Image 1 (cartoon, rainbow, N blue to C red):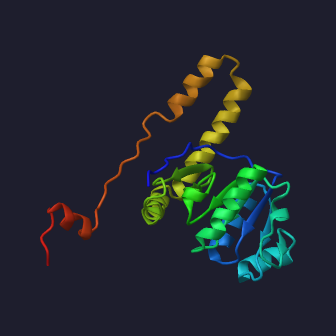
Image 2: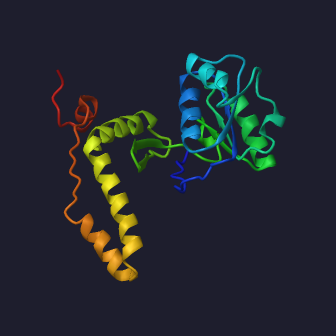
Length: 212
């Protein structure tokens, strides 16, 4: 099946209704990411894990204690299906999404989704989306983990300094070109270096690693 690289955008869900189907750790991760972005979250599943129960009891999310029904998507901007292994169910959600025109992400069925959720590096104000077009989600997760070790607490402080500098420059420098030049100078010298260590299975496949 051909891969779909998608068209990467940043979706504004602040104040918008988003629905998450499921109740396990992955559902909790998606719920928290939506809450961090300011969404109004409803979760639909007969059971919830501890983290989701705490969010429900604190009033941060709405819990519908049953399986998903089509009316649950009414008024929703985005529906995220975290249930795995049921292709027929994912297809029915996909058909509903096309009919009712809401965005749908089925986490293990990207071909039955209208949007895909990449792995996200989250460090202060920095967001880096890592996608493998659905062909190797485990690799996307490893890339995210490694990048998060690179962008450490010092980098977060650097970002805060840049934010403050930009605000001060906007307030004190009226000339657009001089303002842009000052902000470009502030990041002059920043450089990101990287190296890749490949797994032995891949090196043996290429014939660059002797078999043990």
